Amino acid sequence: CFAPAILKLAKPCLRGTLCSRPSQSYGGGLPLVDDGFEWPLKNGRPLQFVAQIEAAVAPQWRRDSGFLLFFYDSRYWGGSSKDSGHAKVIWQQGTRPLTLDQMPKVRRTRKWLLWKWSKLHTAKITKQVYLEFHTSKSFPSLDRGLLKLPSEAEEESYCEFLAALDSPIQIGGYPVPIQSDTMEADCAKCVDVPVDRW
Image (cartoon, rainbow, N blue to C red; front, side, top):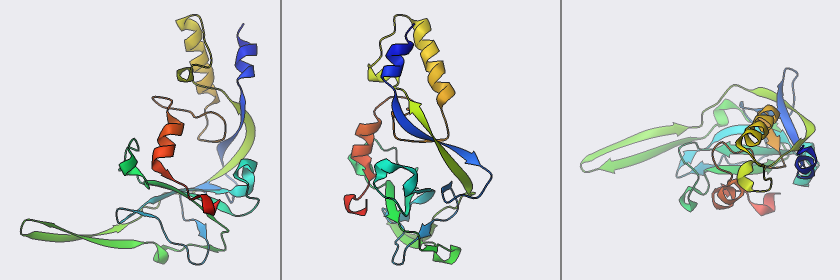
């Protein structure tokens, strides 16, 4: 039985699930922001707002008030330093709700030979869904090499165990990779999280 070895590797985390009751943590919709808030851009295009999560939900964020706002531009793969800024996390106290008329509208003009054209770029708005969080444990993927199992059957069982734990959103613990477990390295290269905003 490999249960003791697996449990020894466990790290605490928070797992988020969809809920029907209104919550200050949600995905989609529009964020709560402060005066002077500037919508993040990447190469002149607005990033898409992904989620707002109450800072007090996760003690490791060292904020007991306000919200972390998550933004993303899916046009970038995220595997290169050139992609830096395609994902941003911004802390706000959330003093006011952002409205549709305050959404960024950026017009970009392009030229090619004798042709010239312009396009108006706006951030997409997705349906708002509420989130709630509960404490849980996370376990490493086999890619990390922290757990050695003797056969393919045991490895497959362990992967099924990890899949059963999966939830729409997780804070803390081990990453939950889709292909390869290089999350920390990829984030260090590509995610813009200003230290002075934390």
